Image (cartoon, rainbow, N blue to C red; front, top):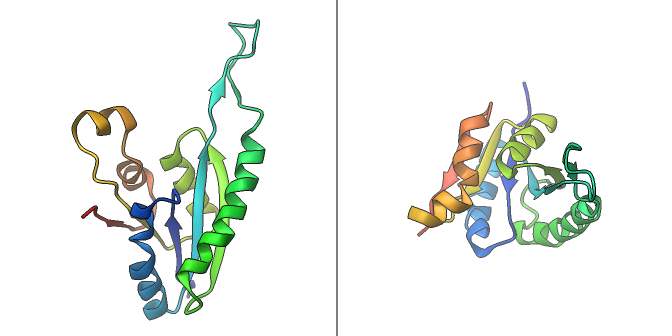
Length: 147
């Protein structure tokens, strides 16, 4: 039987932290662990002086992933010690697809994410990471709605 592994997505905001308590409770009830995860959006840039060259990932992306990993270690302390917690930072062109790929890579059985509750033009412009995760996920996704 596969151990329950819940990927808990965070963008380090107060809204993301709303999912921490309920996810810890669920992991404890299921005898599982949590992988606290953050995806750095890897901005694609065109090489200077070569407008027809394919876009490349910004050179500071690996450093941003390392910084996110350090921040995740601090953030993991908010989850307490009732269940095992690992941290994982990665990069991808989009956060939603990156989270799904990260979840697949760690053998997640669930993905937990809080929504920011954006509507209208803000949602259209900014997109919805939670909606994208639901669309691409291969495992159940638990969405914690905004208040």
